[in-house]
Amino acid sequence: MLCDNCKKREATIHITKYIDDKKTELYLCEKCARETGHLNDNDGFTFQNLITGILNPDFNDLNKIKESTMECNNCGLTYEKFKRNGKMGCTECYSKFENRLNPLMKKIHGSESHIGKVPQSEKNHLDVKKDIEELQAKMEKVIEDENFERAAQLRDEICELEKKIGSE
Amino acid sequence: MFNDENISLSSWIKQKGSEDDIILSSRIRLARNLKELPFPGQSNRKQMDQVVSIIKNIMLKKKIKVAGQSYKFNYIEIKKKTPLQRMMFVEKNLSSPDFAQNGYGKTLFFDQSEELSIMVNEEDHLRIQVLLPGLEIKRAWVIADAMDDLIESKTEYAFSKKWGYLSACPTNLGTGLRASVMVHIPALNLSSNMTRLFEVVGKLGLTVRGIYGEGSESAGNIYQISNQITLGKKEGDIIENLESVIRHVIKQEKNAREKLYKNRPVFIKDKIMRAYGQLKHAYSISTNEAMELLSYVKLGREMDIIKEKEISPLLLKRLFIIIRPAHLQSLIGEKIDTSARDIKRAELIQTEINRKGGQI
Image 1 (cartoon, each protein chain N blue to C red):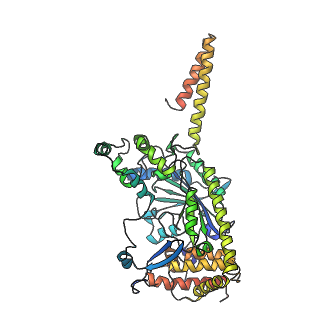
Image 2: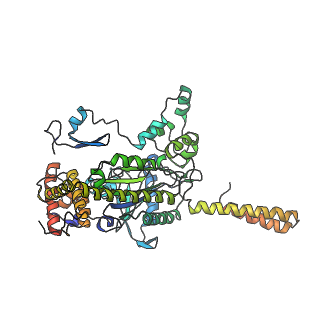
Image 3: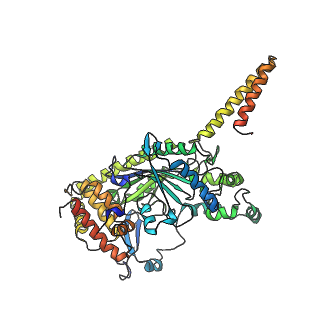
């Protein structure tokens, strides 16, 4: 198909416009699209751009200086780089930049916390923690009853469980 | 002339599905990262290799049982493939356009039917994907969920209690879930209700994209509708919400078809028969034009305006894919320029209709 404008070159760009629900279509070649202002390399709307847009309000200078020195100790991602390309570098980045991320999440998702699926290992973790709490309650009770032998057993069980989930 | 052995089509293209007059495919994608390694954007080559080898150890078994089904996986390294081969994965929606760009460490695992696949070292370590024909978004989730459990049982994911599954891009944070349905809605498009549809869908936390996902254009009246929000919602609710909107879209499209037939019979019959004629007799045809004509022929077949039974839904779905540039050139077996392609495309469509239809 030929370009609607110059009628010489092959049309490679298809533009659909809606004005008051009325649809108009244009087939243009790249050159004409640029010349008529329909093609601009910088106006691509992507979520990336949206994020960097949200992250780049006009901060005052002090904030800017503070920000420019922020960096994740684990992967080396700087806040500057995150602002530029909108991508986190590793698990640790999320703790490092947590304060900055809260408002961003609110803007993107309208929420700051996850309520969906939880990995089994994490669930086990939670289950073990619950078990520990129950054992601790039991232990306090047997100590009150001066059953120290049982208390020692319970203490060892608690230690075992704590080892299982790593010391926290 | 056109060698079928040069291409392999996914089961979502070859098989029928529910509501497949309007729904082409259902897709679930989960973004996952491994806890101990930096995300691909901050990784060095050794770390990317590590991710690949962890996933190889999990996936390359004789058989893997996922949600009661047996799968056998293969893998390809993107950098070892030609641009044409890579582009074919994009055209059948197995790879994102970004992932198909040459780059170190990018590896695609997929089963024989290509319904279950994993992109490794995309912007996240893992992108688990399930692609099914028709409206099967719930079943797709069950499979993806089970695959996710299996991988998680053998490695540790980057996860935080507060933020859920951690992804490179904050837009995927939380569930890491993108559920999307590919819809073919020519009658709605002709009735110019699209802007309203986009608005309504947007208000419900969903978004409409082109055929290859974010930033891509629509062609052939095909759109992808998917959830936008991934944090602060449960997976089940995201899927439920999407499915109910899709059911509404199906209803609207059906209404629009009826109205067109009732109110503008000459317009719609002429549009469809002209499209059919052009497809059967054109000498040169671009991808977008072919997609649009195929769209009207599909509509015509479904509205019983085109009567030839051989113009089957599966033939049309197949054509929607194999006329795209990489598939077309692979069928021919060589790289050719756009104008030569357009001529071959017209020839391909006619060969396919003749072979399957024999009605010209």
